[in-house]
Length: 458
Ligand code: S3P
Image: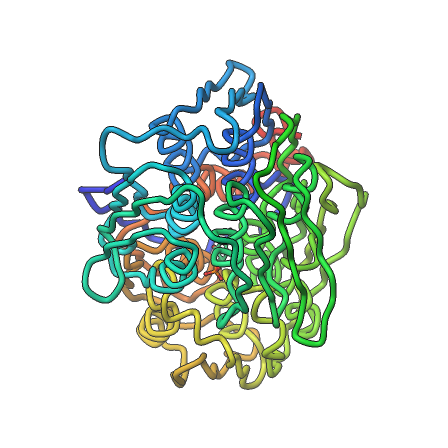
């Protein structure tokens, strides 16, 4: 959704973060829960869905292609699917807002249906590369016309039947993998994706849960994921676990703000997503797992984080796929550490909602942090645990994770950091500032109460 009026926000130190909050539903899992439910025959129910703008864009697109999607008063989402092969021709362009995941996965869905769809998005999304999905989907037979540079607006003319392919991912991307698997659902025969570097596996887990014939095998070339079409999906009841990417902001905030001691509840801990926790623990962060359990087929726990002195590390490049969305907030942690953190091997950051290497280098430099930009990452000289100067106005560049990361940076800075526009936060974490207010509300903690649990889903 385009936000016409920028919403500036000044982030200033407010004392320790204490109490407990629950993070909202996982964005990746929420998109997939809606998409697979829309392709099942019958009624699926989803609880814990992330009600952020990105996921709502997916819901709107699926409705435009025939699925019935209703939110009940208790927050349960009820989806009546059209069945694999049953998507209808949308009457107008599908507005993907800021959401790369909606765009790339839905392009895969449309590619093997006998329909044509036009995809449009905001200025950030319209600059992002779609060639990575256009190439394999075209090989399957879809006819895709894109704007110069392989960007939005673009039109996908699906083909039915599409041709099954075996495709080795040239970049580590769960979106590309998932787009091909989604196209494979309505493609007769076996569609294979070979993944040399493991990425988040929510599509594989959930498709198996919906009854698709999907196998995952190791090979010398990497993981081979094979899906047999034309699939029939059985409706499911899905509980979406909390988003570890959203939890990341509190893990870093709790680590850098002196005196903090907080609990983040309901954090999904799928091993393909936990790179930030590993990196922070290597830096000396005090993070403990409480009450480990399984939610919706995914490992989940509550995380307790206490302020701790952080030490710079060289971030292992092989952690990149499991923390790809968490680099901006890791850069904030590095800014408060002792020593020079080197985070490289993450070239993909250049093509996220913004160029996250350049955007963070510019923002941190404006706040008095010394950092050096490389094509694939940043080197950051930490403050040694003391306040960074702050006192600057920084640009979020239509990027929710930059807005939230720089808000976290301001919580321990010497002077307030003003983010020029926090409106994009609504794409993935509409309750972010409410949760921040709860964690910094001394009226609650001074009286010995933890935060108002009633306001947060369990
Ligand atoms: C996602 C995959 C990642 C991630 C994005 C969500 C997904 O993108 O950055 O926020 O849900 O599949 P890439 O596939 O481009 O790495």
